[in-house]
Image (cartoon, rainbow, N blue to C red):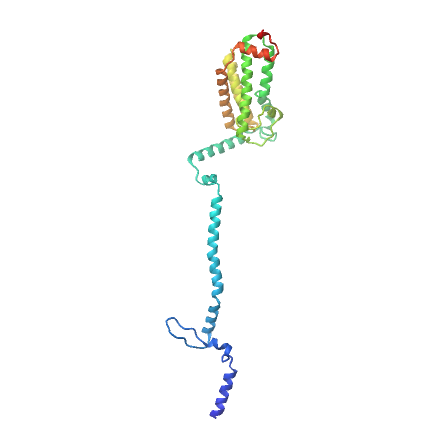
Length: 298
């Protein structure tokens, strides 16, 4: 009986899977922390140790990725901060002066767009567009230069010719100065419009400053100073200058600040022309040269 029992037990051990050499490592239990030796046992702990022995590879890869991501994001942020222009940084924390200027410009653009009631035929006051355009034409540079030349050719008095020559020079100065400032600033009007033929001839293609307002202010001040006019005519002359400047705002060509600066520039041109006023003899010399009459030199 004992002999047969031993034979059967050895047969079961040979048939047992866990007793094979390739599975012997499963029966070994990993040593515990704090123990000097390890004990072997069968069961799930060996499986856990086996799984834990295989996990460090992916964990190490994930750890390296997590370590690399902050570095890449940090270097990316540093590159973006290095590429950020200085003016953008200033806009994030603007000064009081910058806030005030931007606010005034925003108010100017908003009011100018609302006042452009004759900008197009489909605008609220589109039916008055032709009348407003005719009013603006009375302050055009080409109109005044041609009119002054015609009056100069028909004038027979020395005083009248003196005033007309100085007025013609003031008009030329106004046209050239306004055109130069407009080319430097290059500000567009509140409404996108293509300049007309007369505007291109007078080099009035940009918004700042308003050429019509500058010319109207200079001409009205010039005539008030050198012509003897009745009080009603003087009031009408001042109103004409104001409405000529406003007509360009109603047509959507200029902003309100363009009109105000145009009036100020026109007064400056008048003061400059008064300081360099040409005498009657000088005006006669210029008239003789222009008409090819050389009699004053002989």
